[in-house]
Structure formats: C-alpha cells, structure tokens
Image (cartoon, rainbow, N blue to C red):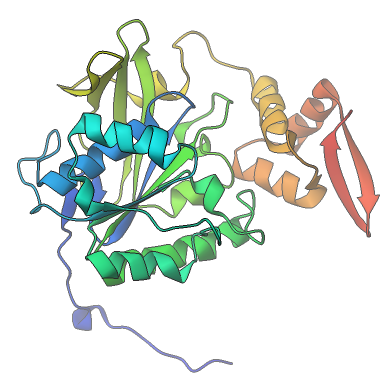
Amino acid sequence: MPELKMITMSDVRRRRIAYLWEPYIALGSLSLILGNGGTGKSWLSLAIASAVTKGEALPGDDSALPPSHVIVQNTENDIETVISHRLDILGADCSKIHSIDVSEEPLSLTDERIEAAIRRYDAKAFVCDPIQAHLSANISMNRAESIRPAFMHLAKVAERTNCAIILVGHLNKSRVVAQYKGLGSVDIVNAVPSVLYLGVTDSAAGIRAVVHGKSNFAEQGASQSFRLSKKDGFEWLGECDAVIDDVISGDSTGRMSKLEIASEFLRDILAEEAMDSVELSALAEEHGIRMATLKRAKENIGVEAKKVAGRWRTSLRA
C-alpha cells in the first residue's frame, strides 16, 4: 500500500488564472477548438497566434500580453505554401512564430520537445493542429484510459511553462450533444478546462461563429464571429448570438433518432479499422448510447464480429 499523503486546503497556494484570451483561453492550461472540416479551425488558431505575436487584444478582451512567441504545429497544411501565406495575410510577426522540425521524428502529445520548445522562446501559446495527428501509436482516441495520461502530461507542461496549449480537433458527424461531438473518447472534452466550438453560420457570406461551450475557470464568454473570404482573408466581426447547436450540426433542421445517432457513431468509429468489441460497447455507453440501441444499429448498418487472438473485434461488413 502506498504511503498516505494528505493535502489540507488551508495550505494550498492560491493561483490566479491569467489569460491569453479572456475568458476563452487561459495561460498555464489546455484549451480545445473543435469544428468540422472546412470551418476555419486552422485560420482561427493562426489568427490567435498572430494577435499574440503583435501584442494585440483579441475580441471581447480589453487586455493583451506584450508581443510574445508562439509555437505552431500544423500537420494538415504545408508551412511554405499555406501556413506562411496565411500568417502574412494576418499580419503576424513571423519572427515570433516557430515550429518544431518533425522531418526526422514525428511529434506526439507526450514528446519532450514540446516543453523544450516552449521554454526556448518563453512561448505564451502552443498550437497543436490537429490532435489526431499528434497521437503516438500506443494512444487511442477511443479509449479513455489511453488518452487521459497524455492530456494530464500536456496539462502539466502548460502549468510548468505558463503557456496556453491550444488543441485543435475535428467533430464527429453524428448530431448529438456537444460533449459527445469530439472524435474519440469524451475524456478529450472532459479533460480540457475550456472548449470552443467552431462552425459556419452563413456559408454565402463566409461567416463563422466561435461558441464557448465549456469553461472551468469563469463564466462562458460571448460567442464571437469572423469572416473568411478570398478578398480579405480573415476578418473578426465581433460578438454574435450563435449557440452550440448552430455550429456543431451544420444545420438547424430536425433531430436524429437514437437509432440514427447510434448508426452514425458506428460508421465514424469503424470507418478505418475494426475495434475491440468490449471497448466499442464501453465507448458507446460513454456517448450515451444504450446497448439495446447499439445492437439495433449494428443490425441496421451491417457489422460483423470476429474472434482474433481470443478477443472479439467488431468491424463494418465488407
């Protein structure tokens, strides 16, 4: 039995929360930006990074840090042809934006180079875009016991360096409550103190909305909007009335049945590979899907289970 150690609340050092963007993104903590593909997640993260390098206040925040360094790790867009051009459009001080060279060794969430890079430049923000591309082979987004240690490690890095670590992730396709919209285990959302949801609210005008869906440190901030256009690039528009349902579903019409939700859940999870059947059932329960509904959904879309090395694995039927 390990030695019993106790903490008395009167002895705990009080730490005031400081912000990169109040109340949306705290220093010394993790924040999460979730959105569907093509909604402008990378643009948003680069707009935040650009403001930090120039010491500019972000929308809804009256204060700003002095011009500071930022680390940006983006695996979905090329540095030379996309990222650098977007930063130029945003007017960023590119001498203060850096990226860890991963040409010889991929970067994972638990990589020691993250803390080393933050400390080298005293960076106030670290952008990881997207989460999925920065998971090592032994980490599964669909398993809470797998993803939780990686996030705990990253949270400690943020705390030690007083850096805002901003994680960017995709939403799954099923229209369920916001907590369950992030790809993988709900622990991804549960483990992060602040979560921003991003979506298109007016496709014709190129308008997006950022909705503060979760905040452990303060009241949720007002929704903010911005426009993406070929002419002007990125443009902040100010506060808006968007709510989570406006940005996570892609439309405001109707609601899916429980069977449809479970069916889309299975298609998303099993799209690329088979999954351990016990783990699949546990993940479905995390997402609020009852076992009876899951069973009907399996019959609905056609899945099969095969025993491999003594364990049942479920996959989409070919």
